[in-house]
Image (cartoon, rainbow, N blue to C red; front, top):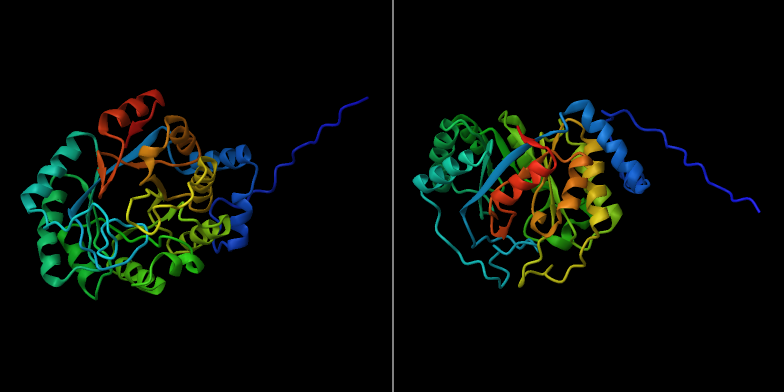
Length: 327
């Protein structure tokens, strides 16, 4: 009796800089055989980046808690009963000290986050000095302050801001299940203001929020079809915090997270794809596969806004094991 072997035929690969991705096309990519998908993403990664280099960013919450939005994943929302208390804004000196420490630890970009729906003019004025002084340290600067009004992005740009982060969070069809206090179009409007001001865009989303694979395809398609594509794409794996509506969300299988990283790389070949929230819950092997699949940026430090992040020494040890170097 003869055994029969099935020959695997590699599906045709799209051009590495294809535009106008449909949700169906992205879903097909997510469904490729796991090893084939990772291999394809690794090939594309090497066309546009040095696979041994990783961009390191540090994120500091300059204003924690008390946010009026009701994002179902966020412990900083006033709508949820969580351990995160409303805290005053950090001072300029405190932020600059944190930035100096981040630079000493090897970070090249310093990101400032605030729990606002959007900055009031008085709030924004306080942040402009922070941005200016952090920039003077020789770091790239990034801010995530929520929805922007006319003229605010230009003020941030003038102060020395390089990147503005504003995530789409999830697919348009899934969005209302996660957030009710702002519309999807509000997010796109802020991204338009950021681009018009000449700022670079940091825009990604969160997976593991009980979404389907097609929902993940919808998020990636939205990101990939931004014109131009985001310079940075943070991919967050939900950190389940007690008191939030998503504390009981089903844990996303690690292979599905790696698939998401790989498809982000395939569809956005020139973007930095960043391992963001949820990395503390990943073992080293999963993180290594993410780097192989095209991730080339991480948040670096002991805290990511209000949730834990692998500490600096652990990150340095992992990068040494994987022969990765900081940009």
